[in-house]
Image 1: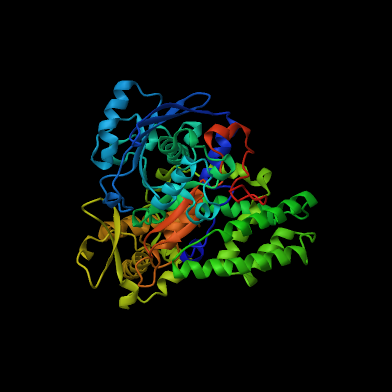
Image 2 (image 1 turned 90 degrees about the vertical axis):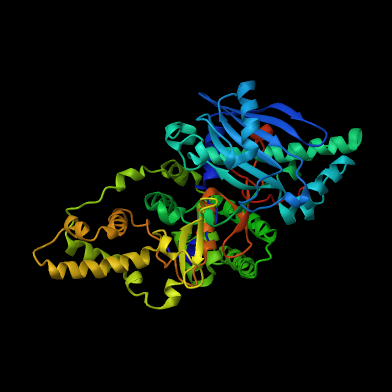
Length: 552
């Protein structure tokens, strides 16, 4: 639970995209493009329908002809190449008409409980134009250009859970298809991916007429959906301690189960070796201009060469082979390499671990009530035992207090300010738990000295109500050991990008490409099947590129 390690996480079998597609496959969900009213400029409406055993959902897409100068990844943008809404059911014509007036406005629109997810996306201009140009003359896109970008459009927001007046998650959380975290949002992204290819093929046909061709399915699978994610996502892991515990615990439990295997079959070992070769191909295509991440990718490539040598000698035929491999990785690989090794070790053991994906949601309200009967001495002992890393930080050092978290008035999004250079620290949001628990400890000690007759937490909070959030925090962490990030989130050297990557790895994202220490581009669903081929594809074998070269 240290930021540096969390910022090196990779997707696993438990990641939400993969768990969603497995669920859809198991339930024999059907997908269909039911409307395509897109004109010669690429402007209009399209609808994609997802049909399950009990319910239907519709992704309604509104395509726009956006001038290049208006295309931006910034959250403050007001126009996009396409906007989307995931609709609960099949919309009537009147509802589509209503949504056409509102969805392109995004935050400024008005919505009903039938709207589950709101999103928008912009084209990756160079690749999008290359693909349209190539297909328009009957030629498949260039493989190197496809690999360099990896998506035709990238989303700049995917909103759910009541944002801007759309449906609250509580309304749909009981539905089997949405019990897992963020499944409604990720269903939207998967369907958006289909739209990004369809609109490119449509424009290629407009441009080339009878010469135009469709994209080869094997080339098409190289395309995911890009995403630009900034600080708005960063505080999530801090504000939802019970939920992040559920995520990390599932991952750690999966790893523990695999490490406890005494002997592995030759089939599993061969599968692991094949998987390692595919992962090496995936890392080769992982590009970034960020110096820190570029250096880490370079070391990761070396790590995988070392891992391949380890697999051959001494090999995986020894007792408890996966436990030995993980132990070896800690002493020999970088953090990137260690965490990818965790992903690879878990991967071939679906029968042992996939059930854990269904337990990664949690009722956070169960942990909200504060236990006022807790003895102060008990709380002090727990803080000393669990938070020595926080108590050891010198918060009189300006470097330890350099930042503060706040919410922007304009976009209601979390932001990070420089405490000693910018105004607004008086509006700081309580995300600095290392500092706040150190302060709590100091005040608990003083309160105990002033009240020697066994005081309890209710007495303390009556006198010092400003500590309620910190008291709740330690009581949650006592029951949920993975609930706390064990770092100073306001220090000068803190890297917000590590928070983003950790959360996005649980989504199933890949190709992390930091654009600063505060925002990152990623790829989602690259190599996954498309809706029109979903029923024929293997259940869950798409995360890494195939070893057999694709055409193009």
